[in-house]
Amino acid sequence: MSAAAVDLRAGAEAAVRLAHAAGGELLRRRSAVRTGVATKGQRRELVTAADRAAEEIVVGGLLQAFPEHAVLAEEGVLTAAGLASKSSDWTWVVDPLDGTTNFVHGLPFFAVAIALVHGRTPVVGVVHAPVLGETFVAWRGGGAQRRFADGRAEVLRVSATAELADALLATGFSYNRNEPGRDDNAGRLARVLPLCRDLRRLGSAELDLCYTAAGIYDGYWELYLAPYDVAAGAVLVQEAGGRVTDLAGGDDWLFGGQVLATNARLHGALQAVVGGPPPA
Image (cartoon, rainbow, N blue to C red; front, side):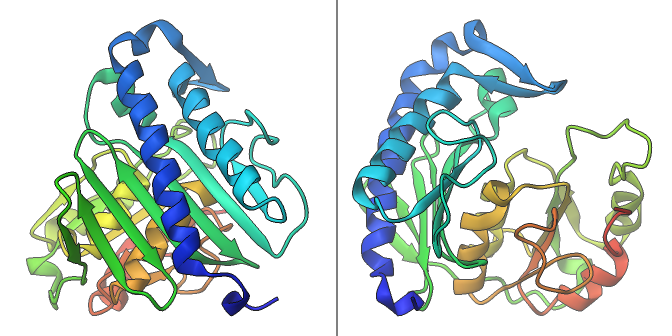
């Protein structure tokens, strides 16, 4: 089945509605969040009752609206955690709360992220930041936009920055960063920071990608990511005119665990400084 066989715009709008519903649930649970916090495997990686409640809303809605599609969701509420619910050419990839640590500590930089993947290619991306009142929406061939809570919308384009010295960049750090053989990203950060205008680390990979699509950031990289960390935001970057690769410059960024996203003009220069993928 080709990508054209699914109405990508309709799929995106369905994802927007579910992301807004899940975002409303996250807002309702913010005041009591610290009473429902657990860890996933180790102390830094948190999961809350809010994650699970938001995932129930999104995954339940997707299974009802698109029963023939598979769903891959982070928390495993209605589908196995990190595994697709069934075999299908079409898979919805869901992160119900990207930026859980921010959410727990009261920072507003978190989002609901929903993507539709055809084969191994994301073709729809929706990222909703409920506290910020911003929803990022894109589908293959339809461009990228940011919608605001007051009803305004704007078309997104990546920046025109052509020199690393003028670039505002972003990165992130894995929860698992003390373990033998893990790349903690500190060496890459030390190489990049002296060469750029400045660098940010705000704790939500999906929103970092969206801000690259919006031309706020000129580039972003991160290691040890899952598909639900990057699938939606990557569609925004691509539809806004940017480039998304793995750290080797290839296409294994969705399932390969690391990503480099830029305005395209800076891609080669930033890739050269950041360096290649970490050891397997």
